[in-house]
Image (cartoon, rainbow, N blue to C red; front, side, top):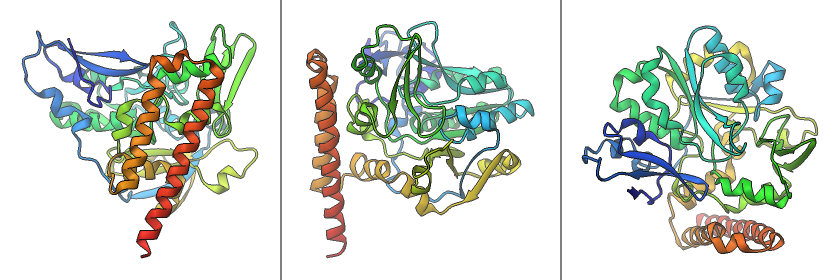
Amino acid sequence: MNEITDFCTGCGTCVSVCQQDAISIVETKGYYTATINRDKCNECGLCRKVCPKVAKPKNKVSTPILIVKGYAKNQSIRFRATSGGIVTALLAAMLEDKEIDAALVVRKKRETDFISFEPYWAEDVQSVIASSGSAYQPVALNTRLSEIKSFNKIAVVGLPCHIQGVRKYLELYPRAKSRVSIIIGLTCSHNISKLGTRFLLKSASVARLDDLFYRGNGWPSGVRLIEGQKEHFFHNLHSLWADLFASFCFCPPYCLRCADDLAEYSDINVSDAWLPEELSQKENTGSSIISIWTKTGSELFDKYQDLFKVKKITCKALKDSQKYSLFFKKHIFSNRMGIISNLIFILIRILNFISFSSSFRLLPMNLQIFYIKLSRKLIYKSLRLSRKVNIYFANN
């Protein structure tokens, strides 16, 4: 058995195309990688054809056909969702109208440890609603793509790395492509290994986890760890969870090579509206930014626009809402032009590598927390330096 470690995204597309059953997805340090059984492999090359890692990175943000900011009119769906309830409301309506038979989404593996998620086919409205919210951990979504043939029409919801794999899979199998009604991409700056969630559990001294919610119940919300009648809450912007996320600690290595933040290969992309007018509200149920990338996405959004309350915004507003993650994606991770960008990348890689080490997990919790907070400060100080340097050279 040979593990593919060179920044495999663990999306699982290769599993769906392998006709020799030679590829499996294994969990390594809380994230997934593909493993090939060389005794079964016949070197057909199909896995390479569908691998997102082989995709040419887009180092500049494309211009969507349409950009709007808004939310689902169904307040129950909106409140439960990550931000705005756009995806849940759209999928629910498409299922009710028989536009699709199923949607490939992600859900919690409740029968295990509550911190594991899995891909599954939601075939009714209740299943779609149950899957709403975020899953801040890797999921091998595309291992289920080979099951598309079991349905007449389907929708797919995934992260940028999933969507790139889906597009390559559909290029290889035109019959499957004819069954896909819509591909919805979720904005992703980077993912977090399961080790990150376990770190939170340990920091809160949770002895027995009864449930886990990464987002939902308003915006911007945060991580909720349910222990019996007790809830441990980590705010999405001001907490140890925010420090952990911004430090890139426990971030899977492949995220540090990804240039796609806005799922530019999808039909419709949905993002948090990280804008001043949203962040300044004390009581906020959440709004999303919807970027329409294709004609298919535009036609479908027009058909279901009555489900939402939206207004047009500019491409600048879209970029402003994701300015830090776009800077990392486009200038640090994929297009390291210049000494400063390369130094920041090296810094992030070193900090990230240490967080995954067994030695790190042996440290007392107070030292682990100190390291996470320090890593965040170091990265953002270097980021400000980089931006100042870029502005200086642009003006001189």
